[in-house]
Length: 454
Ligand code: PHE
Image (cartoon, rainbow, N blue to C red; front, side):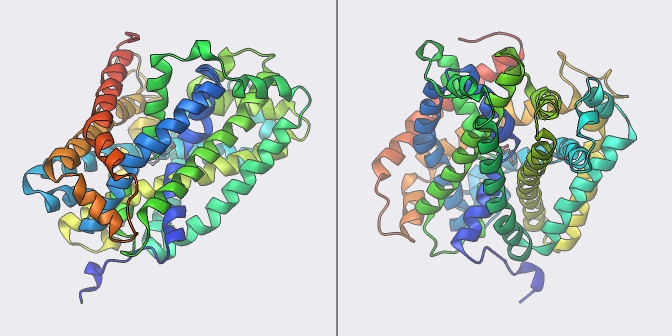
């Protein structure tokens, strides 16, 4: 058999679960989840998030993995394989990781820089006021760091699905759990942490609103790496006898568990540091790159914890970037039939070339902006706020009304006794999910134009 056509895959179910969890656990869990939870009612937000995870999130993830495994194709051809007229969904789904990969690596580069600063003992410098702004607005240095991040990702992809992705996930993911627990324990045992923990966990029913619900839904989507072809690609590498339902449950426990722990590390730490000022929790990227370094700098033992924290973030970002690059590589291998090696090198060059303008958007190219969005924010807006909901909506309609839920259910049941909640699945995919996704789409577009929807 032609070597390049041989499909390699995950050697075990646990390897698959760890790799998919590696994709799911990323910057979204580590900085976005904690501040959303703090903002939208603590314990009550956690409860909404949990309910959505086991219903909506579960149904969508099952769907993508089953489509991937059934067809054995990347996102580009998985849809057309099941129904020729629906190939355009595959094209749209493939566009998402192609857009996200470069700018994700820009942020990955920032994380490498901070991990390096803390590990080499320059944590105090990294905590200084102008450090972050001064760093990202430079021309050469951020490009150097993103280059390192991209090359590390490339090496894993070149090693292949089993030797590269599966093996690195088996090492990094357990380490990630250990590091998360260590930091969370350290933070919650600091003097004064109690008030922050209460703020994070105590249900505040007055903050429950339609907005909180939509925020949880949007977060869930992104956090589980849905609607970007990733789970289809990983599903295509899954063994035919691996139980999909169990796998998805494990991936969700991982993803939600780390998000929860991230809240326990960040919310009490920032809360104590800022004297209970909620606003400091809401700052987007600056929370991770400006506020947290200051928090670590001000804590006894904080420099060591800071180093551990940024190494943790680095692992999380790396395994997510790996899943993005693998998805893009698999799309072009399917499309061109060229070797994986050749495609990986081409994709790496593309990623570096496209990452540079996103990086420079904070410096020499900062003049280019629409509605206050930098170049990176614009890519993020198009992929996350527009394309992803559209792809998710089309996927639900495709499964619900074109190939019918039975296609997915049969695939799930081919490796387990029976899919217990198949009636619920059918209702979720046909009606509930499409309606929810339309709501996210409308609200995120209106929000981007400064109109608060609800
Ligand atoms: N799921 C990741 C997170 O929670 C985000 C991600 C986006 C991963 C795109 C891969 C690709 O941060």
